[in-house]
Image (cartoon, rainbow, N blue to C red):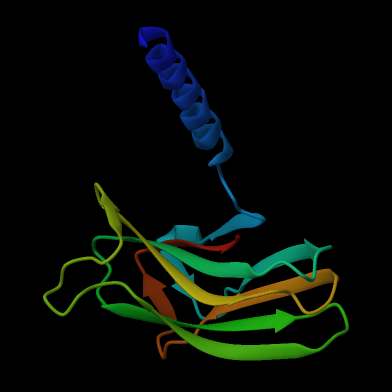
Length: 155
């Protein structure tokens, strides 16, 4: 009986180890655009080029934004423009919530940095080939201080 329990424990341990090792980074694409002087100017466009060879798998599209704790607003509006391999384009405005009504940060805070993530879409790419994602500041401000970088992650 003790041998059976030990064998079962050993098999369970190996199974758990195998499961944990299979859980890893599932990012298909993950890049960041940093801003000079920690400020996002109206003319600064974050450009991400993605080569897609799989048009069947459903993908999660995630924006990441890093600001300092000195950032003055509770959100940030951006435009996301996508050009597909066939030349078609789309443009959408997206609000990235950064702080709650009480002023506390929504994202992960580490020292004076706040990292906020937002899943803005979930779908497969319609066709294979190179896609270009361009993200611009959609606010009325010419420059937004205390913005470190913005990233695009596709899982």
